[in-house]
Amino acid sequence: MAVSGFEGFEKRLELHFFGDDPAVTEMGLRQLDFGSLEQVLDAVQCTVVSAVGNSYFDAYVLSESSLFVYPTKIIIKTCGTTQLLKSIRPLLHYARHLGLTLCSCRYTRGSFIFPKAQPFPHTTFKEEVICLEESLPTNLCCRKASVMPSKTPSHSWHVFTASDDAHVPGVLYTLEICMTELDRVLARKFFKRPGDEKTGDTAGKEMTQLTGIGDINPGALICDFAFDPCGYSMNGIIDGDRYSTIHVTPEDGYSYASFECVGSIYDDHDDVVQILQKAVQVFRPATMSVSTTCTSHEVWTRVAGALEPLGLKCRSCAMDDFPAAGSVVFQTFTTRRK
Image 1 (tube, rainbow, N blue to C red):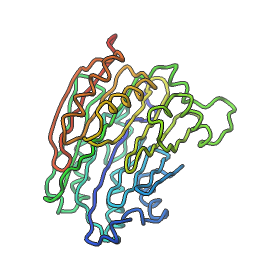
Image 2 (cartoon, rainbow, N blue to C red; image 1 turned 120 degrees about the horizontal axis):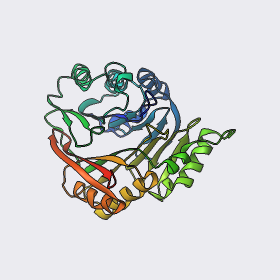
Image 3 (cartoon, helix red, strand yellow; image 1 turned 90 degrees about the vertical axis):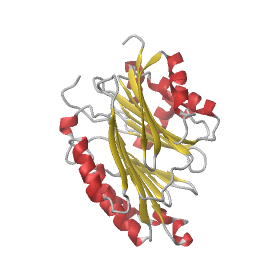
Image 4 (cartoon, helix red, strand yellow; image 1 turned 60 degrees about the vertical axis):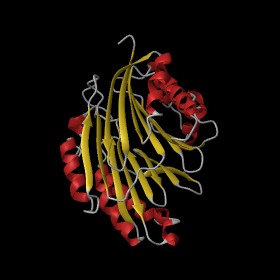
């Protein structure tokens, strides 16, 4: 294991809002101008490198991961040594000016590979929870923080949720997949060749096709970017308000890839199996975790069945219930040879 390197494990923040004026909520947060978004991201210490959108939401590839902006929901996912929780106060400020009120918050992350390199308040989960508690308005009175353990020391799942009394979890589920110890040959595909002067956008498109990422959701509108000298990010707009996102840190010794997608509990659950298998085969990790946030048990029960044919054995499974989020199920897997 390297003494220090780039931190692949992301921090993820999801905020939901409501408004009384239908004319406001129709576009809501999407009315924020780019300068306002830049100010939020400056606080986090990252920038926009590429963007795409449809009639439902806007998806931004960041210098450190992704940002998704819906009329009444925003999701920010950042890696490295970014200070994600510093985005909360400016986002609440801009939302208030749009006539929007925060009704729920969910913060999740895995276990950092280089925890001592993280800046405050991300030095410990306890400090993160204190920061969240102090940053959120008092109407979010239903709060819970938990660290979900596993039998794999490098993978545990940190969850904080807060909501008002009225917020009800929807029908969407979220899969958050963290993969480490990537196959070395496959990881090399995320390095730019020496002397390659292609732009990040052009090189990103090549990596999407070369690695098979483009086949995970064949109909997706993909916004991709390759970093110099290595690394890759992708946002995919799948169907209406659905997205997927992938981020890769390919360096040997601390290689990492994440895959996240959303779906509906009413979807064909075989689709979950196929998407999960395709995503994992792009990287063939030796160790991985899957966090499923959902109001139904139908989704997470398919995860082990999807991964075991690929030579991955389920080593642990933890479940907990969170206000405004539903159930979170955290499963870890390793290759059978480990």
